[in-house]
Length: 191
Image (cartoon, rainbow, N blue to C red):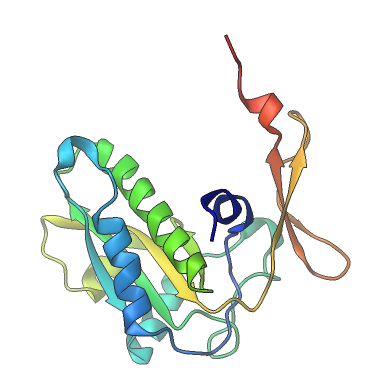
């Protein structure tokens, strides 16, 4: 798969087939995150792969999905919900650069997932305090994000729009999710 093709075509997936993701694919996603550039090469991120169905069901109500098209893209447990999550963990005392490290690592995980026919949803609207308890993390650790992973049951599409036009994602008449992206010529200045 070409890198440009993956970057342009990879979309966030919120509805999933009810198939288990192979551990080897999850391991490759973590490995991609592990080798991603990070500030001062400190490698401060850790990951928890959650694929136990009981734990996945406990995590699910601690997440929020696609606010702009709710409830149409809120997965239903056992029907369209992910069957696994990857939690991104860091020190509770980490400085702000940890969020940049996490973003780079998650992007690498998403691209690796996409190359394997998997979809992901990077979740920031999560109940971190409850997740910390559920994961039995010590006081000096925090949950930064969750990444839902699974086989896509939807095909969101991106569309280029001029700067100033709405960038809110929306559903069309066929319930296909559209994600507006501001055009290249409108986001970059050349000098």
